[in-house]
Amino acid sequence: MARHNLLGSKGEMLAARYLLDKGYAVLHYNWRSGHKEIDIIAKDRDVLVFVEVKSRTSEMYGSAADAVTPDKMDRLIYAAEAYVKRNSIDLKFRFDVITVIGDSEPYRIEHIEDAFYPEW
Image (tube, rainbow, N blue to C red):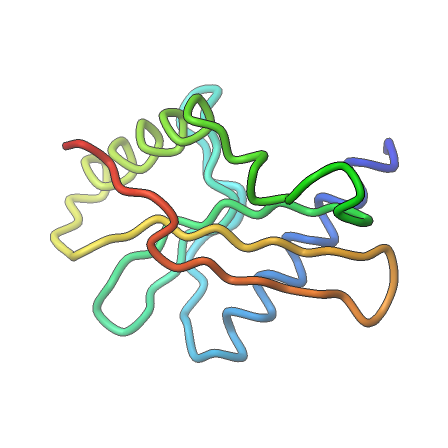
């Protein structure tokens, strides 16, 4: 597996552990609808949370959160809409971004709640 794929998998695992430690229930990892993917789907009390995880060894070339482009947001929104419809979900929801920075302990984790809003 390529180094960037290993870094991404490690980042998703650390992000899930972070959410569990905050009391979230993690429902799904890498949930797919066609070619669209949601890294983590979790519940924060009565709110469904769709989480995009971005991992970087450093922020030398810019913020990891900046990698969540409008195109990426559109793909996440599309997949989230498919998840809600397929599972007949009737909950409030939000889109969060978690960044994981570093290539060894201690990692720096930033959680951006309500990182963006869909227009549906």
